[in-house]
Image: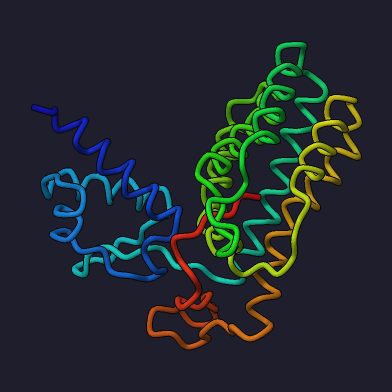
Length: 250
């Protein structure tokens, strides 16, 4: 018999993974009974998992109405990207200043793993492989890890995770073939050369590209609903009809 703690943790991990992959639509109501059947756990484990995800901003708790998937919006995406650029820059500058030989070795190993991991699970559908997404996450973690600041690393990880929901839209939307190997290699080379200005510039360009892909696609014909029933006044939501079950790291 699994303990209540392990059941809750399992439900949390599975639901969080599916939220990041956009397996649920923004604003979609999360029904306790459906989730219990989906993850084969009891209602108390699901409720605790939802409460934890609400505290992290992936789920919205509505008094007397239950839980919904947190919305995605154009304004929130732009703000998230700008803040992430600032935090990644602080981490990168700190790592370049403080990182030693072990940190350098981790960056080299992470780049090697990333560059030798197949990018596409389905190239025609522009769906990135789970292995590539994980290798990409490890690469960015390695770059930042040398900064020596637990708080900066915590903030960076939080922003990265929230970015993943938006990145799940970007693969099938993009009409641009990016040379991701080159982008990552140049960031790593500038970092290992301890050229902080160039490394931060390349990182900012790298992070802003996916945001540009998404926003260009929305403006090209997938306008967000300005007066959605789920929207607060003045908040524009990304269209819920965009492809789901896609993963696109940045």
